[in-house]
Amino acid sequence: MTRPIVAIDWGTSSLRGARLDPQGAVLDERASLQGILNVPPGGFDAVFQAQFGDWAGADTLCLISGMAGSRQGWREAPYCQCPAGASDIAAALAWITPGRIAIVPGLSCERDGAPDVMRGEETQIFGALDMLGLTDALFVLPGTHSKWAHVQAGRVERFSTAMTGETYALLRHHSILARTLPSEDGPLHGAAFDAGVERALRSASLLQSAFTVRTLALFERSAPDELASYLSGLVIGEELRAQGALAGQRVHVIGNDALTQRYQRALARAGAEGVAVGAQATWRGLWNIARSLPE
Image: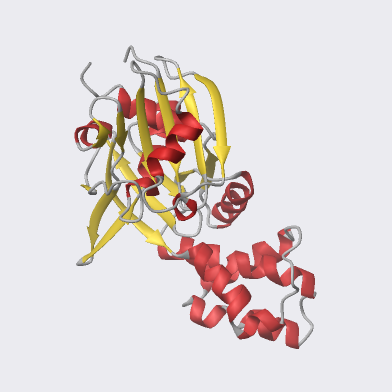
């Protein structure tokens, strides 16, 4: 790749971008709250020009990952079927301006007769592989909808989604448990979080273990300010339990610092090693996709 690159991560609630040199080094970064839900109909080009127009010269390649490629985004980019690598993604770009501005497609796979999808996480995975010098790895990308991805020979072979963050929010704010919990989560209580993880790992189901948030409060066996951490441990522990045997495995965690630390802590309870991946994975992934394109 001999052209400068503008790398953009356009999500549901936020927009961020980086200006890269042809070797992938980050020269500058920008961020705003103009995620796709905050863009008026027909307004994507105007937002792009306002945020990044001065970066996107005629000789610049601009790649956009994330929800900008959804049906609610700038232009729908059909999913790439797994197994897929960076070159497969590069071959399936949805071009806004041919040769200059393109949207990165997400990935899809079949699991037990039903489809699963991701948008944006695939770019982070390819970036992490390049940063770590790996071709085979297990990744978790925690969040509202956590993704677990198995990579072999540089290609995402399969992945699964867990609605962990959303489930926490529903239980935290819209269930009977909300009456037990304080209005704010507060700082992480490590011992309470660990207890939640361990209960989830040995429980049959979150449907059973979640009720212990109420009973521990009812019998005053946990302090009120510890219960949000305990519930967090329960839902993350349930996510790990559903993955099967993790003991002895190395799991690469791509997420913000707070979530990464929680997942590393929970993985240790499951006998696995959680390896944090740097925050530059998205930019590195978009650069990796760009260098797969013909000059």
